[in-house]
Length: 464
Image (cartoon, rainbow, N blue to C red):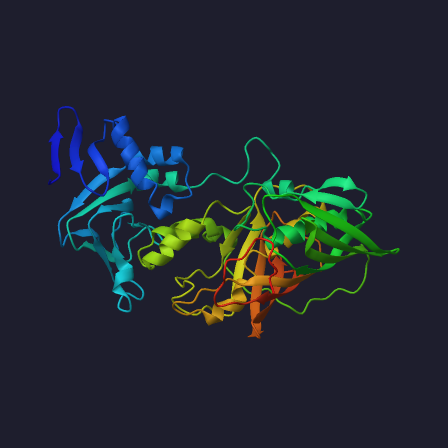
């Protein structure tokens, strides 16, 4: 049955009869009239199948359903035109197909830029104008979330309104069980992809060891080994060994355990503040200020709806993205590359800082930086080997940090990573962190395991 659209100017709304097989709708009422309960629930059911919206709660989907606008196009009609001055919003394909024209890699694989039901597109990475044309190749029906309502796509902020402490401080809270034994937890809104995030191991182990040294001694170096993947559903027991306590230095070893197995080991050295020689050979590269750059979370939101990118990639990003990180990240040189479209440079530079204001404890700030240091470090070693059809998930093997100068993790730091080499399925990368004054505050090195294909394994299987 053909869709029937008619207006009732006197009442000020439009009724749209819509018996599509894609989604069982009786009718929509737009503008001044709300949908009835049955129609609204059908729209919510449709939205729940859109990859972009998988991370949203049912209440958010209901709010979106109430403000969607119905759009109908005939074959050959332009849905959007290149460089349109005004962006209407985000489109969801309800029925029919549309083709993206002028996309990166379009000639290589046109099917990736053929939009079908449950696909979506909208603003691009670099602004609120359309960079390509989208044309209906069949009769096409879309649901439009207008620009004024696009804020409904945002996930809940990471900071719990019921708790004034930043999420990172709560992640780093160590529950003392004995003099040298502490218990840590993986909070529900902490970063995790089915296993304990490596930076959490490093930061919690460092926090536990810091509690066993006198407060005048601050960590100046750490060396970590990742042994097993951690279970996010059970606590982590951190056992601290006091290897040495001198006048100016103390050394600690920390073993993180779950179910009787050692998952992770950390060696950390602490030093009392001392005056001495001071110089710096490494120079901070000139980059745009972080305030002028787009945040990682906004970048991901744009990638999910950017029709310049392949459909499979946008769906993958939408499916994997769950909530904002407790770290605000601003990439200095954003680009359109995906894990398969082209090789990435061997350097990565971005600004980062903790969300929320942290306390003045320097030990806490160094734990937060340790947490943030593992967010993207391992990936730079595999970036030069990207190719179409390849699936690779690098895994951190060992991680070293040297803290040179006092720092604040809730103020912007520039992280510069360099991929040195890869061989024998292992990649080595170095890193430097600078404060806004250009002072080198942290140096890093990490070795990662690089596998072209990853087989699913039990949660406690070894990485090697």
